[in-house]
Length: 84
Image 1 (cartoon, rainbow, N blue to C red):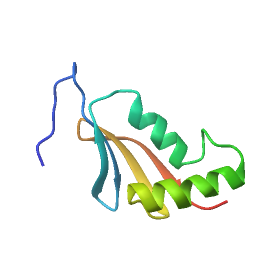
Image 2: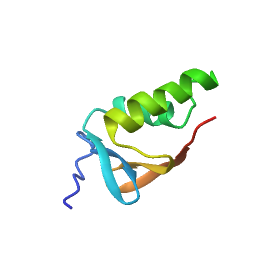
Image 3: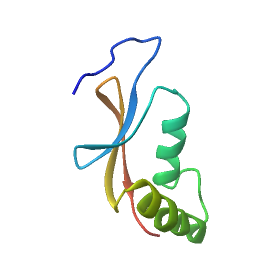
Image 4: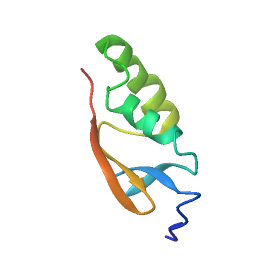
């Protein structure tokens, strides 16, 4: 897979099991989604579970398990999608 090494337009991805699930050139979007997926932005357990079930799994194609936030081909964060 070709990786954009241009620091003025970084490519970010959220991967699961080695597969890119989301990809964007926006520097703010994927870190925010990553934090949602790992529960950092959603402290309420029921709201988080609803988000995972209805958005992450059904709409985005994620599954429960480990995810990685990748910037320009390098893993910058790892997290876990789980139900609380």
